[in-house]
Image (cartoon, rainbow, N blue to C red; front, side, top):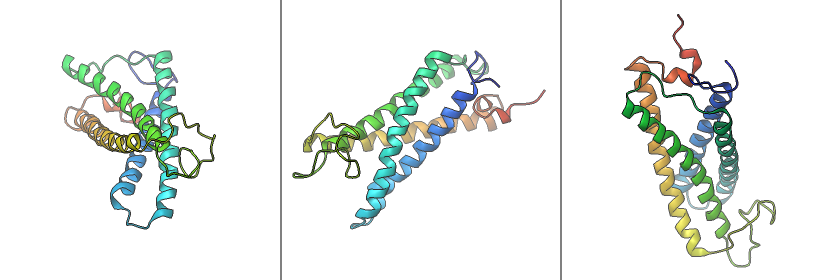
Length: 194
């Protein structure tokens, strides 16, 4: 298997980026939902640690997604799997590009949410654990914007979760029901040996 994509298959780089980003996003969603829905009141120390990893991972995902888009431009994408109907190929393409857009929008909305938050008297910074200037605050403190972006970030996470679930469901259907080679394009070990 080569590093670059071909017209028939994903290369090592695309496969590695896919699985790395998938693991990071699933972990980040889990941590985000725990922070939002499961932490008891007064868990500030735990929440600060979780927020640190959540936000750090968000910046990492943004960087990896930027690299992934550059890689797609350089390496191209494989043609749709030959077993797909025309409508399936179109839906698959829309889901993939939709996921790309969502996985860039999520860290950006998280950044704006964090950058616009804070209390009067605190130095302006993205999060309490960043010293001013490490991650520049190009937004400034704005309570209404912060509240709005909290909602946008949360609701986008529900959309990400739904699209990822559909993506996983379709991949599993192709493998276990249709028995075609669609899932093997991202897990080469599943490819049928002739």
